[in-house]
Image (tube, rainbow, N blue to C red):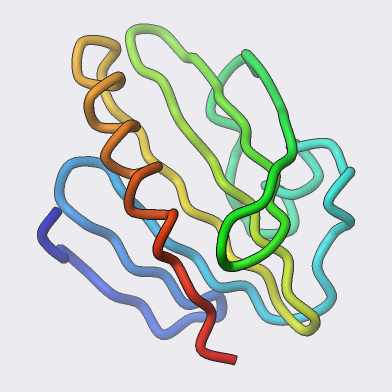
Amino acid sequence: MTPRAEESGPPAVARFEGGLELRSVQGTPPKLEAPPEEVLAAAGVPVPGTRLNATQGTLTAGPVARYEFQQGGSRTLVYFLPRTDRFVLVLYTAPERDYGPGSARVERSLSTLKPTR
């Protein structure tokens, strides 16, 4: 996915072609167990439709929460990675027909995510 735009923030945002967005939000993060709506609000992101699921897990980068939403003919995957003094959101939105392969690529990529601090 090719980089499309970058904003220094706050929050810092990187957008990529194909519907991928990364947000780094400074400050105390919500708790990992917080409802996804609370996490998204803390990042200034509107809730992208109806929540389909919310789970927790662990990546190389640490504990994460994973959410999926659906609105109309599109779906959104959200990963929430809390750090000590900030949190990272990974958002991927695509039409239903492209969502499966695209979200699988995003999730494979996340297995190599390592925070720099």
